[in-house]
Image 1 (spheres, one colour):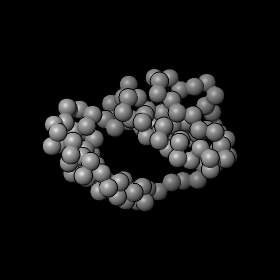
Image 2 (image 1 turned 60 degrees about the vertical axis):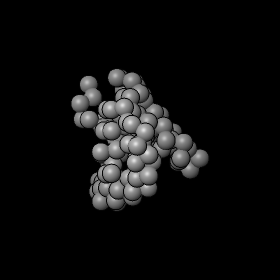
Image 3 (image 1 turned 135 degrees about the vertical axis):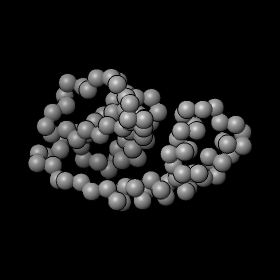
Image 4 (image 1 turned 120 degrees about the vertical axis):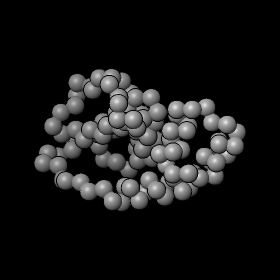
Length: 108
């Protein structure tokens, strides 16, 4: 089961017991696929220094921000804020790295 199929099944349907077992069994393959996607990504360096990070996403799309925050909170040198609201906080500016997560691409 590929990553997107797993996400669709988990968040858009009520998985049966056998489907849930398949989701759990394919978890490491999903992680490998996510790492491959990340390794292929290219980024342009910021023109401004990054003073804080905002990770924003609604519903299931916001879960990743919480996980990343917990993983890196003791290593990162700038604060991370996880936002699960429709509105961007007022502190966001040119020195904020904003990461927007939307699985469907249809988030309002």
